[in-house]
Length: 323
Image (cartoon, rainbow, N blue to C red; front, side):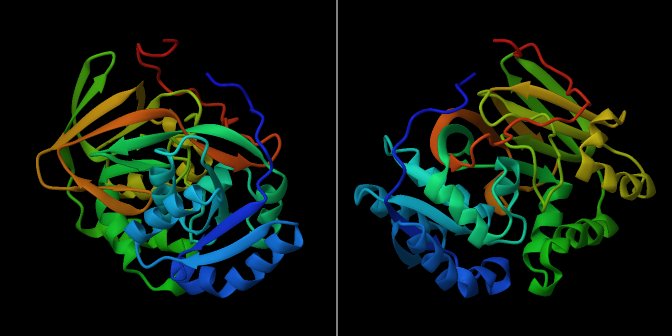
């Protein structure tokens, strides 16, 4: 939908915005070395630590007003907060350095997993306009999900930091023990399709991955202006556990209990209360409306960044495809 790249001046002034608690404190520990590496690469860099996500948004706006590239060193929640703020500033630029446990947006963009190596993308990368999702006025960069995922996220967020990105599998297995399928109602606009089903999860994806490399929406495209909506029907617990490894390969979308739709907007309701989580943090309560924000933020990516999946399983396309 958009060109592969567009011309953008290489950033010379950088605000390194750090969530010192990300990754069990890893982001705070590596921040001095990251700051030194950015400066070694010729960038005028300074550091600001966040107190919470609202403070992170304020720091991003301050950086943009000062003519600096806002660079996130933390998890996807921090990246989403900065993107949410910067989408309101024409010409603002966002950089992403992996400092959390999952780092899924960095993974999808092809950014190096080592934060020091990833600094090369800040100094020499290309800027691309990327889509965001939005719920109740707040934008997110990756995937919003609800149902079983709500419980798994809640447990994972409270889990010990020593688990690393295994925390997501831990959250899923703990949540499964008490899970009872929910009745969901999903409305897609366009094409105006209404779906009711009993199952585990509704995931609304702008990006492909969440949970430390789970390719829940393997064909999602950060530049197509659409959301991939993944519906997971009810199955037995043993079958659910047996299918979990398929999510890391993206092959679960070929299972009969998994459907993928595409739309610009989706409304989700359920037969009991759920929090909708996006980028690992609660963003809204059901019922909720999620919409795509095409080309909402400019992000630095490595040259030749693999924004599209090479998964062989095609997603089920709705009538909006090709619009």
